[in-house]
Length: 245
Image 1 (cartoon, rainbow, N blue to C red):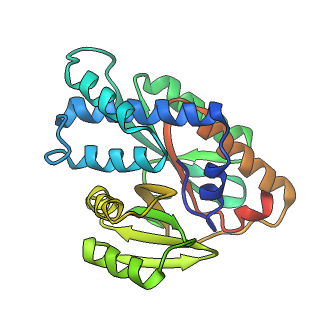
Image 2 (image 1 turned 135 degrees about the vertical axis):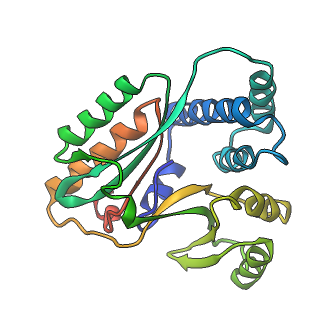
């Protein structure tokens, strides 16, 4: 559930352990429940739900799990009150970082986020401090194996995609942030399988790290964010993340 840098975070997702996958399922389940309570259980009428269902399927959450979460959330009137909060800050050497959280305790989550930034040589900034370096878009990632590039590009654009990119054996379909669910649904109906499908913050410029210590600190910072149950997504503009793998 982390963002774009030479596909490294996408690759890391594929290697998740069972425990890490269970944590991803829990985070997505919480997100589905909150969105259902806010906008209803019908994805045809709730575009945010359609988007998060696409993300859930890309993360291999079983359909029966998705349906059970939606049904349960639709019948719940009370429960914890969650809010989405976006934090911005800098990692080592000015790497821009955006953290999206879904929390029932903003003081706890803000304290955790600030601690992770400080612990690994970064600092949390104010709202707007780095978001201007990112463009919010739908992002669908597919492996190129057994996929016809021209056919995929044609199908994606026909489904409403705004852009199509390929690099290092990976295809990336970009969409308007409100169209991610509809485009991924259309491509899924044609048999395409996704590594990732979500609304993401795409960096407009990238920054490389040259010192091994900085790379290690940035990697540890991202891992701490991803391990926190309140944090739904992390995006950054670290260019050479693969070098720290």
